[in-house]
Image 1 (cartoon, helix red, strand yellow):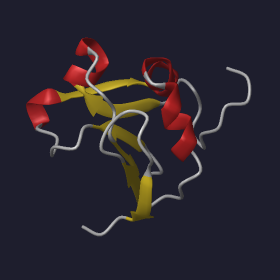
Image 2 (cartoon, one colour):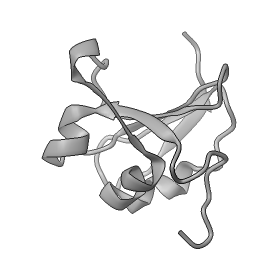
Image 3 (tube, one colour):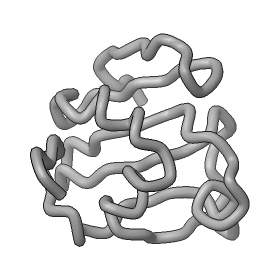
Image 4 (cartoon, helix red, strand yellow):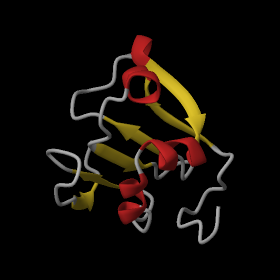
Length: 95
């Protein structure tokens, strides 16, 4: 993919929900993990272990190209929005 914006390669595994990966649910919460610099692309609800799926970063961008808007967030930060097309809110992740 030309002009890849993320700090992980296109074929790197990312965490998402099965309903996002396979049923077209929206990506509304993006986390850039501080410990391993991995990425999570989720809904607004807490992810349940039985609903987790791993897919390539490139597949995430194909599902929703607007996630590239938050590719710049540093590790340890997250972004969320209320609906696809809505503005992203970004802040340091506090557990």
